[in-house]
Image 1 (cartoon, rainbow, N blue to C red):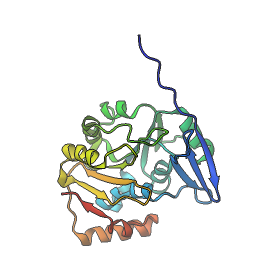
Image 2 (cartoon, rainbow, N blue to C red):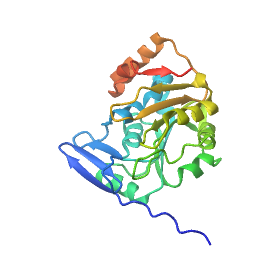
Image 3 (cartoon, rainbow, N blue to C red):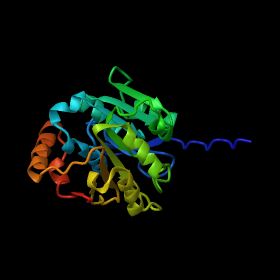
Image 4 (tube, helix red, strand yellow):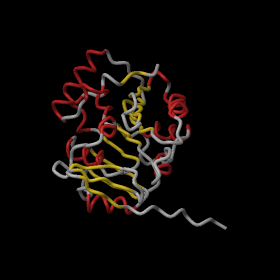
Length: 250
């Protein structure tokens, strides 16, 4: 007999001054939005999920495809779609999260460049449909307790790598009381190779963003500084600060 599916958590939000926070039935923050600037990225770790921009020619960004595994408060999805003008696909398991993002977090309706898909991230990553078509894959998958990544196996990261184009990049949020950063990093490195993996220092809240490149790159410091300047000037992301806390794990 098939066991009944695990019930999905309820979705709610709270406002603190100018900031709106998304919750999944607990006090843990699943995402946020500035009410007076809803298409910017508020949280520091979510901004760092955009650090793949350091590894591509800025002139090519609008021609690329971004995919988010886990919608959260839709900050990444909105930024890629509205600010970067990219083709953007978001995968979210909980229909209440999609509804909440559209009601409370200014997520636009689907259009020719935006597709929000109700589905399981593991199944999507393993499926052939998007294989080799994603330039920027952003993985932020946590349950309502935010205890550890929901998907964190070597097999899952191998599926993620297969989604990427040749110069594609995966960014992953590693956070949680019962998670092991080193174990997760080892799994990512086993799939991508240590020479293709970069990592930030943890934020004050404990989020560590890891970047894994489909094809290894070791750009010169001057090239990274030049790209950071463009990212800051064009999209108002603190890319110059990223370079102080981002290093290759090789």
